[in-house]
Length: 231
Image 1 (cartoon, one colour):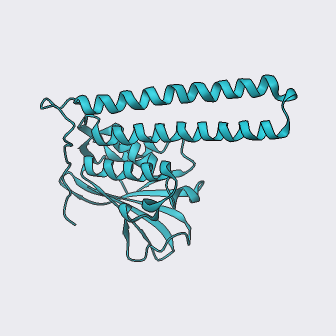
Image 2 (tube, rainbow, N blue to C red):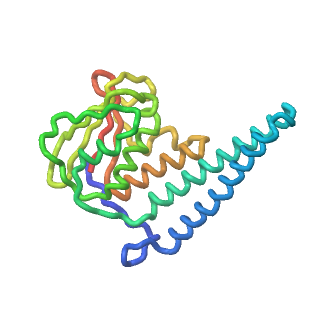
Image 3 (cartoon, one colour):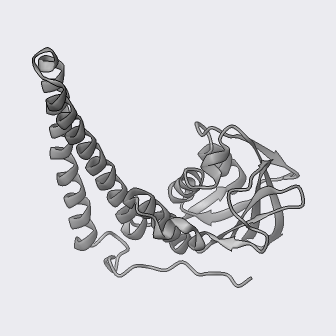
């Protein structure tokens, strides 16, 4: 498999810092999210104080408005995260990739276990972006549907600065057919009607491009989902 080199988006100044387009997108995302959050809070306060004086139709309509406010808040948050994945400056440094992967999985509803990794696997990457990628992967289908399962983390190969990590979800699943292997970008969520799911998937792909790695999904002989992270 050929190694995919990290790309530097055009939204960067020559010194590597974020350029005005990124700062503008960050500001827009922030300024949009703030009033949405305030609207949601005001609606919640209004309903709490006037519930006894409102009829069922009024409560139903207010509930719909609250749902839309929450949806807009989620979308603005996803848009901000996608903008960060595309444009936020990288902070490349040597890291123990196995330790970083386990740290990124803390708090997720999975049980990660290192397997056959006898010494640290040191590579140069952006630890924040790599950790975010791992967290986002486990929020996407089909992995999110296997919450609570055991995840076996192993290093299949170690060539100079090019390890390949394998994560095995030790539960059977018939969610997707991965017999021949599929890249992250081939997920059906690419055509999802849920804009937050769509942005999350694009965020993962943007992080892969920035970090110069690929993520491939398949199944082993035990019908367990296998995730290969190839650098």
